[in-house]
Figure: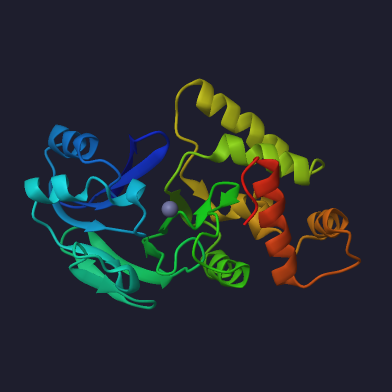
Length: 259
Ligand SMILES: [Zn+2]
């Protein structure tokens, strides 16, 4: 299995998974033209599209792609627009011939029905887990999102994380602000600066690296937890309250409207 990044729109990634005999599957479809071009350039035959969630920047290319390649579409049951032909739920497993077998993890928080797909040491995390960040809470609660991230964090540490956006450099600004003394964040910052300078993707990342650098996987780490409590003016707080605080803290830091 080989996995390729196809950059689409401003900062989205579509993931192209090449299996045996030039068969492939595609994760998310923010735009069709770059995906069709990549498929044709490699002489691949698409067998399926996997959708992590319903947002337009993950689905806008679907109609055009399906008119060119009529393949099944695996996606969330509870966000099942007409284009999802193979609705998936938490714990489901499905196989795409000559590409691979995929496990489904429901990860509500960014949207109600968001799914993560895992296969052979890879996790396609959409807008749930980013490198050094996580998705904003558009349809779910902080408790749901934290539980979803805990489910991903329970995968093996060497799992490679293929996420839906190139947000790593921006996310590192907040990570440095929240945890200025974390040497893993400083090292990741230097590495990402070099990757971006040479126009390379900063993903996939590994779960082990995310556990050392991603504030949203680190709310139980003592230094960050102390900083979160100081930020909230609280002597102590629950894990869920700490997660909600760090999510709001980053939204404020990024200049976005607080949720
Ligand atoms: Zn989204």
